[in-house]
Structure formats: C-alpha cells, structure tokens
Amino acid sequence: DQQVKQNSPSLSVQEGRISILNCDYTNSMFDYFLWYKKYPAEGPTFLISISSIKDKNEDGRFTVFLNKSAKHLSLHIVPSQPGDSAVYFCAASLGRKTSYDKVIFGPGTSLSVIP
Amino acid sequence: DTGVSQDPRHKITKRGQNVTFRCDPISEHNRLYWYRQTLGQGPEFLTYFQNEAQLEKSRLLSDRFSAERPKGSFSTLEIQRTEQGDSAMYLCATNGVAGGTYNEQFFGPGTRLTVL
Image 1 (cartoon, helix red, strand yellow):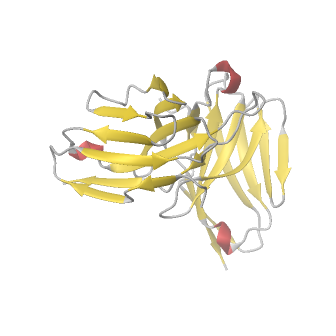
Image 2 (cartoon, chains in turn brown, purple):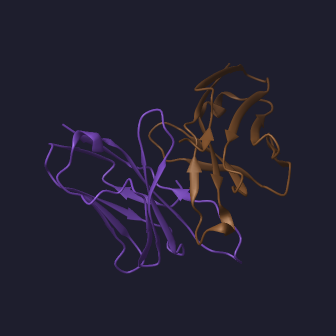
C-alpha cells in the first residue's frame, strides 16, 4: 500500500517555463512534507519542505503548495532550467508523532527541462 | 557532496555470498538511517539508529540483514547469503536533532549491489 504517490513517472518542460510536480498521500497523520532531488549516481538531496500547518512555502525558484483537505501537494519550479533535470521525490513524515524522522518516499518523477 | 560517505560505491557478488557496506555520517549527526531503493521506486526505510542504539527495523529487513553502529559514528549493513532480489541501491542518510524540530536527512551517494 503506497502511502505517498507520484502518478507522473516523467515530465518534460521547456526551459524558462513552469514545472509542476504533483504528489498525493493517503495518511492524514503525516505532518511534514519534503521534496528531494536526485541526480544519477548521487544520493537524494533535500530541496524544500512544508509543515502541515502551512499551505505554501517558497524558496527562490521553488514553491511547495499543500492542500490538506485533498491530501495533495505540488512543487512548482519557475523558471525551469536545464540543471533542474533530475528525479524528484515527494516524501512525507510522521514527524513528532514518532520518536524519529520516519520518512515515506514516493516513487519519484523524472523531470527533463529542454533547452 | 553532502558529507555522508558510503563504501563501496558498487558491489557485484554471486548469490549466496555475504556482503558488507559501510556508511560514514556527518560527524555531529546522531541519527543514521539505512534505505533500499529499487528501480522506479523511492527509497524504502530499512532501519534507524540513534547514536549506537538500533531503535527500529522495517519488516523489509529479513534475518539475513544486520546493521550495526558500534560507537555511534560509522555504520555497517551486512547481507548474508545474498539473493538476486537483494540487488538494489542501498542508501545511508543522517541527521541531527536541533531543538526538537524536524531536520532533513542528508544522503550518501549509495552502494549499488548486483547479485548474480
């Protein structure tokens, strides 16, 4: 049973345009959400996060939106750059409901930004 | 480079052999996690250490798997009697605790295991 879903395995976007990556979750107990980026032959790298008490968090070109009622979050990248081409993992944490940072990852979306 | 290192980066072994992987965390991080990632999937949690104590193990971690963190610094993950289904990327991640707030995990580059 996949608790974190990323239904688009891949996405292609023109350079300069907006990239929107979507994520859905099933467990209403999740209280912290993260996006990680992964390049080939490297481990995932933290990108941006959002607490369940917020609906938006922005960091430069990256914005994460959270819709708790729909159990949906999205990552917006504006403007998209070729260096953004990577696999993006959505992840959710039970946070303070557990004694440690247990994180559940989605299957990832491969983003290609075309020059 | 996140500061978390893993060794080896690649391991090819024959079915039935034992393998051991090592993870060196960021020095001030007291929490260490092992994940497994297969093709088309995100990382799946295997086990968690706080300092030298192994506090949780996933049901994915069969009896053939054992992990240690003897001095609360580096960690090893051993797989005994490897099977072809063990072929995957094994990732180590670490973080610390700051004021009780959540802290993102820093991942190493992973060890890719191929079981022939």
